[in-house]
Image (cartoon, rainbow, N blue to C red; front, top):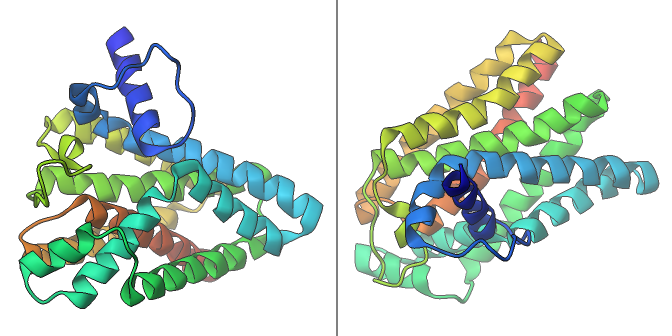
Length: 262
């Protein structure tokens, strides 16, 4: 049990800016195993984002509530996934060979493609959440939606570790410990953490069609997997960040359609 708690806090330490107990020491082996808690981190980020929205929308209105909620989730994760999206846009936008793409992605500076990618993804996310929340959800439903979006999107990203090869940019790559092949039970456990909020949301609002959100998520996983493999032979840590951001937006867009037509 103590080892499992260490692995969980390692996931919190790596994927968020939340302070961890002083007795939690970084160990590469624990980070290697922490993949199974990646969707659970989505619970934490989604719950806090939802609470920020509820509080801010009450004080300042829905529009500022959405913006402050997004800002809170970004601060909570240290823009970890947004940085990956920007690097991915720069790499694939500016490079035409595997070597050049990886070189650009490793560069800490942001380019035109990265800036445009960030502006677009954050704008789509903002307006999608704003449109979705016009349905006047109960607070519990709203929290479940945030948690579902953050946990499911992280499951899609982490699934690449089990289905595709990791492309090593360098020996000191920050994603290297996470990207090592791990036992399939880690994917199963991660899937459980991701499906619990989705199933709970589906039952609570009595809309079985919400489960169909898994279809576009599966399709984007297939598309991105083939795209990454075609150009660089696999995935990178930045690619996982981009996948999480894209998947989160797809969840919001799908929910908008499902609530509109059901």
